[in-house]
Length: 218
Ligand code: BG6
Ligand code: MG
Image (cartoon, rainbow, N blue to C red):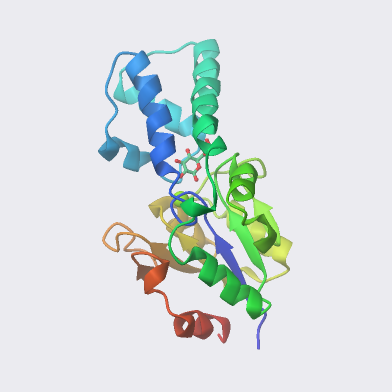
């Protein structure tokens, strides 16, 4: 049997931190004098912090000097971290822990592949850090999703061939990155939005141990 590895995105797959990103970006938008809607926040999924601010400023038609841009990046993250500080294991999305435990029971190596620079503290807050053999996050990559870099580094760290990795993602850019890495892509969320994924589930409660087992045997 071939050695397989599993790679999890963080925001929107393991925890619903999109709501905290939204509140922090909305506060900044309001301070700058414009509204930022939940629908617009969809554009931010899987996108780096810097790119999010560029999009936000476009939405508000705000011109920024480099100094202002850097200040607002920091300000948003400080506000976001205040929400993270209050997180605990109750914020793990349904059945994520069951899937992690199932994979561990089969000795499958597990990595995190996230655009976030806050990945490690979040995993610590929700007590999931021990499940991960490798953490690849926004601090380790030079190219953002849909570039496959984050997942290729994760596969390499796990010592597993890219084509033998399975990726769980909630963002279109993340599914595209997994596909570009020749990995099995599994969309977690709206199947219409994540139509490029190899498999789709609304959430992990829909994913049976039998299905996971079939991915391991490939
Ligand atoms: C991704 C989120 O996981 O991480 C994006 O989907 C976010 O919305 C990006 O912008 C970067 O996160 P952070 O924590 O480094 O600002
Ligand atoms: Mg995500």
